[in-house]
Length: 76
Image 1 (cartoon, helix red, strand yellow):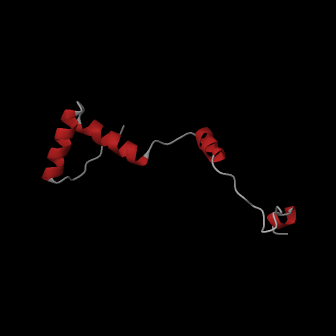
Image 2 (image 1 turned 90 degrees about the horizontal axis):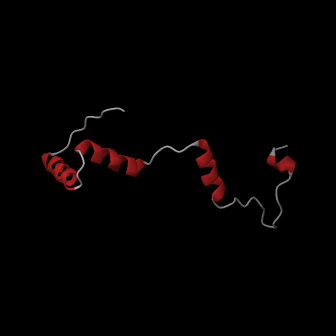
Image 3 (image 1 turned 90 degrees about the vertical axis):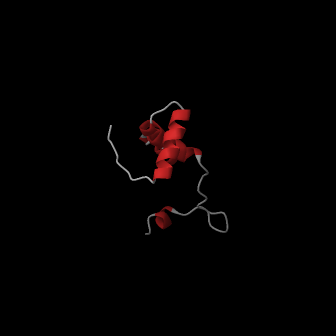
């Protein structure tokens, strides 16, 4: 686990301190959870692939509904 030092205004510091106390958490834990929620956790390659494959499929057909030929795909 790594540590981070960041400057906060007095008002923000006090607000953070009160919010952490109200939630029964340390200020560090609250900030860590907020950052994690904002930027997310890294996911495994398998989870990323499942997420990608669950998304909408790509429509590669032309205006006539024809799929590209092998030569077109490989720019031959």
